[in-house]
Image (cartoon, rainbow, N blue to C red; front, side, top):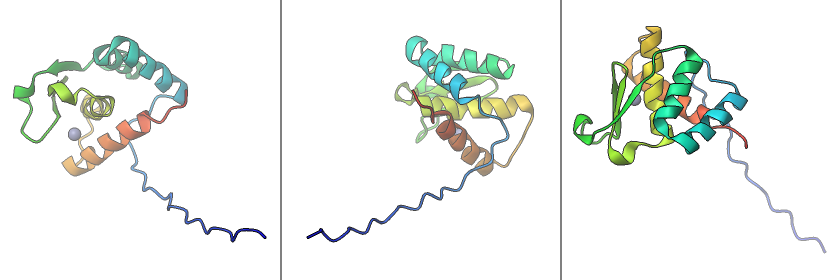
Length: 129
Ligand SMILES: [Zn+2]
């Protein structure tokens, strides 16, 4: 006798996608960039990513005193400051998105920019090895 089929509830895969104002590098380029991150660290990764877009590089500064309480990092004028434990790929990519929109002269509302920065980081990390 066959076991009764389990009903599988499929989690809704509908995740609202956030439109980005900056095009992501291709999947292949993203894989290569992430390998560079693993091998050479965050600054080299950002240098390569900046070069990819043709923008001035964003300087990474690890100095928690420059970061507001309750935050891991902040961005202002070509510089991203991180708390020691804030230097993580997704946070680096998030701050880099602020750098990109700043370099492009695009000024969305703050809440929109934050949402887009999160989406940029999330999408950038979607690669297959
Ligand atoms: Zn942000």
